[in-house]
Image (tube, rainbow, N blue to C red; front, side):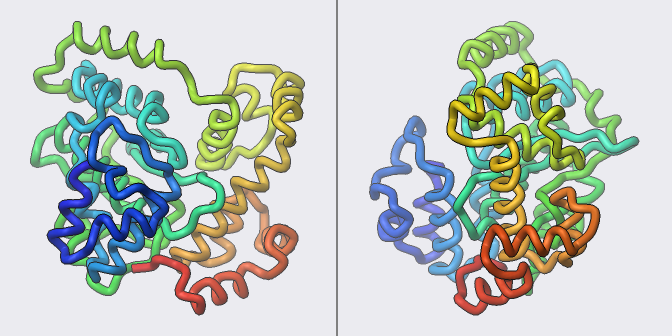
Length: 328
């Protein structure tokens, strides 16, 4: 992120003022070892796009990212023996670089989805973040597979911008907007590609270092695990317990120690995903309900009213009328 202030400046914005406006110190992005909160970063990207009038700022920001900028995780990915192993390493250890969003790899028959889904509570305006995340994923695939690589399909969870030229040019295909999450879809055979100039010794060294760095703290594992399960249309406590390699009673006991329950956390994650899709995309309510694991739109609407005090449609209109969303 250290290159982001210069990008904002080149686009005519005031990076220091925008950083302060996002709740950060003016020097927050001056050193690569600094860390900033996920919600502050989404706010910064959103406000920078608005202040500069650059609706595709997230794409430009994501294009700044390369494996060499990702520290231990980037070195591990770069030295993996195959593209499949590289992407597995990326998704397993991505939490070392970022919390609030989930990098994932899903196999769908002859195709694979490399994607990004958010779960961070209490933040809105994820248009630029999703563009930046998917542009970063595109850069990673180009580094692993070569400059001629292109995805089969691209999905983005926000409304179609008025000008799609930048998206189409960068991703080499026309993205499908109003999707559930950010995804680069490509043939599964690409996973078997060897990574050029990978160093086996560096891979083993980085793999051990990543293991030693440890797993996310427990509640982060819960939030990330639930968001990952939702991508597979699974939503039960038993599924989560199995993913976390613990008995369901152990999961319940640990959640109780954190002052919460499985159902409460599931509702939080569902509510956050619903709010993001309602504010940033034009996805139909039926599709949002299905994304959240509801069999029909009526129980989703009833539950959303319990969460927010209003209906999904009214909430979407009120957010947009207030100008609070960051739609392109």
